Amino acid sequence: MIHIPVLLKEAINSLKIKKNGTYIDGTFGCGGHSLEILKNLGNLGKLYAIDRDPYAIKKGKKIVDKRFSINYGNFSDIKKYLNKNNHKKCINGILLDLGVSSVQINTAKRGFSFMKDGPLDMRMNDKIGIPAWKWLKKANQKEIEYVLQNFGEEKYAKKISFSIVERNKKKVIMRTLDLVEIIKKSIPRKNKFKHPATRTFQAIRIYINQEIDELKKILDMSLKILKKKSRLVIISFHSIEGRIIKDFFKKNSNIKNIPKGLPITEKQIKKYNNKKKIKIIKKIKPSKIEIKKNPRSRSAILRIAEIL
Ligand SMILES: C[S@@+](CC[C@H](N)C(=O)[O-])C[C@H]1O[C@@H](n2cnc3c(N)ncnc32)[C@H](O)[C@@H]1O
Image (cartoon, rainbow, N blue to C red):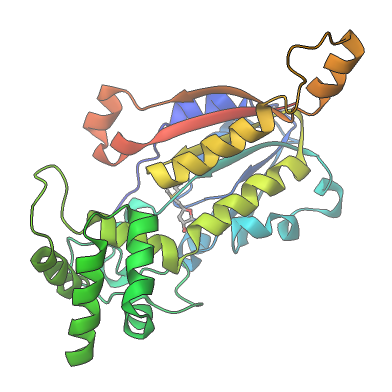
């Protein structure tokens, strides 16, 4: 089972790697991006890789390189893993390749896939928190509906959440394909381009792993640890994450409260400009060739910002 890194060349080029710089790969996964960063680093360079999945950490430990360290936990806890010296704006670049890896999805016992039968778990770190089935069992209909609507943009959130709660009263939903059947029965119209369980599975996974909170925290944290002229490079796979990144980029790159219609001095303009924390560089989507080779990349968007 392999994971093909998405937008590999584009992400590495966007980091503008300095030979002796210090970098963070917040989502090590199977190490595709990390290995490429290491290739571009000189002898004095440093790469801190992080993953919350114990299986990814096992893989990371196989990389023996004095420039590299693999750290087990959430990327929002980034400060914990850095040297004391790296705490204050000493990082030259952060890469995040959000979501789950192909290995996680394709391992049936992890419970991420609506195509394979497995226990309904969905935890990226299966050593902490509660599996999806347990949450579905204890949550009420409104809570489930909220999650499906907000993290999956599921049109039929009400119907699906209602069926989940009703079914759990009779027999607890423990398996992925059990949930798929319930979803299929609750959806009146099928979309021929999308599996009916796509949105529900995405929503439950995001909720169980607190992915939205994690993303918001690392974005704020990045401004505290990234150096001037360093790069923040993020690959996201759905519009909910995309919107959070876009809003963060916009908020921190806009000149706020600049008085309209008044004459304004150069000094004042400078003052307003100083409030800008980042410059948005661009966004990149995978090429048709990449999508053909790796269909998982089809919904990926790479967003790049530079710290001012
Ligand atoms: C899409 S994969 C990354 C693949 C990697 N770039 C590669 O080329 O192999 C995402 C990885 O990030 C991890 N992950 C997701 N959210 C995380 C978080 N908040 N903290 C730490 N790791 C996280 C997942 O466990 C998964 O292994």
